[in-house]
Length: 150
Image (cartoon, rainbow, N blue to C red; front, side):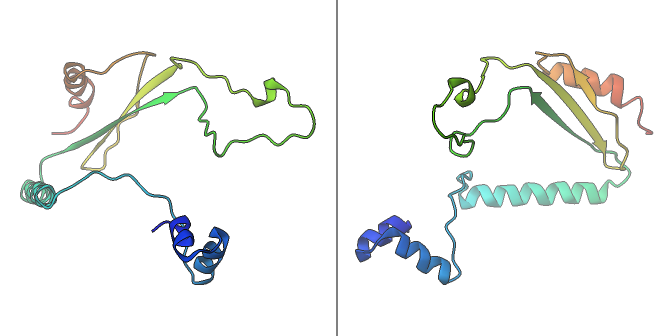
């Protein structure tokens, strides 16, 4: 229940409820978005995880590659709620404005780690490059598989 709703229900000030919750050792937390998982989905995930673990356990000589790609952008992160300006007197628009572009400059990086603990140096892609499935497979064949011991 929200503190403001509880305050209305009890006909007290919201700050009174807030202080009482704090004194009792509670705290107000923001809600977090999570995927809606039914029991069937949870069971399916658990079954898949068990299969993967069993497969890795029974095929210990196989090398598995774990990869992740990350896109870095140049535009700064700005949150209206938290990034504020304190000023006294006249306010200049230059101080209050934040520059923003429609398409910020970005660069993409791909990192790959093997199940044996071997790491590959990061692969950097040019600005605006879109990594497709075919490109990814070609990259694995040319740059990754020829480096790893079989």
